[in-house]
Image (cartoon, rainbow, N blue to C red; front, side, top):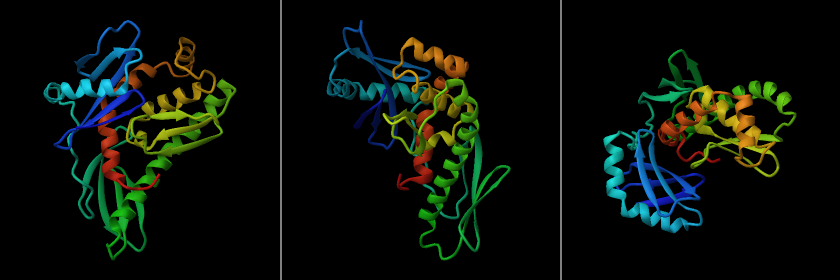
Length: 256
């Protein structure tokens, strides 16, 4: 198993290609490392100051048990079939199951329709796959920017603050971030989630313009702007791994 520590999550890639995501949480009263499994996934709790290598070693020692329990709850992300030129497939889009099909045309483009998207690719097909991935990445980014621009028009006057810019890209573990120059980063996979989940992440990062931590004052600000934030946070925790896996399948090696 390979481990990757980032943000509040630890990701385990199993030998079979499955992905296990474990929520990691330091607790001031914890006396030892503890691994728990719920219907929402796995969580490892540990004392403050625990070295990341200790957390990784602890999970390695419980890897078989962890994989078995998560498999019983159907919480392990299975490898998805690769995107193949000319082969229709389904994928999540804005929280709904969408169809992705293919057609030939004079120039590459995406044609949205009621049930999903059509990728129009000209012959010859020698570079069809990277072209298709680029089209998908651009289309997903446009969907996010369309929603965000509309919501910012409402939230910025309420906050009295605005981000300096918006960057949308694939993110390994996080859903969003705010950098020291007040630039907001959002994960491209949020285009696959329900719009309310995207809205929660945007509000979360906007509130960091006022409060740079996760203190009670911060969450009060989030509550004021988006009262349903808990439901959307929990939705992302439960479904986030599959969304990120779906995005990897769709755009794969498209550069940031």
